Image 1 (tube, rainbow, N blue to C red):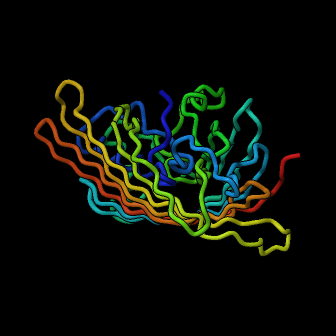
Image 2: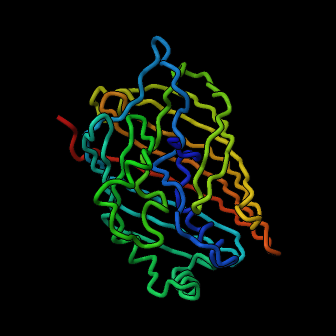
Length: 318
């Protein structure tokens, strides 16, 4: 069954860091990784747009430069920590049959500042203790790139992405995708009325985290806040969108190894160029919590994050 990413624009770093905490605390196998999240949970459902409602869809050919800032803090078994990442990225989109092939890469790692359990050297030492002696977070971030298959609303096709030849090589344990650096904000697939909230029915989704499928319940509300003219005089219409999301789930691990529970909340604002079919900006914040109990151990991980991004068009499709 195809999985839609559960958390709107909540960068995969929350899961990556939770994975590090889980590995360090319990020695669990980290194979399988977390679900890639290229920008969020999308609109959900397949309701057609209402008459008069603008259609939100990405162009399938473009090159965008992004300026991404991520601030986050966490509380884990390894202690408290905080970090800030500023990066310049490039997103290159090309048609891939009925979908889009998206190549994201870090052009420049402008800043990584970490304290406590998120200090880069601390992470390196802790990973070395757990069998990854060559782990270098900063080097991995500087050279990060990834190829993805997404649909017109920005939803990741996980299986098609994994099948890409460019993704065949083994990668570092954490990189740009884990920290949300290659995210395209997902777009609503339902019709929105200007100034009115559209609350979607609760969705039941399977989320793959750490190779473990967790049944999740997802509630989200979209609002088309405004439509204004672009400031650059192009005549394009810029839609301001807001989405609020809550999701939670739990699963008993195989073999009675314990219980894994996940909960998250997020609020994000997206500026979208309706005519060029590209994102203009993204901002918002998320809260994420993971807990594990089993084998005489109890572990919890909490993360709070803020992300802001601006995008500039380098080349448009023909």
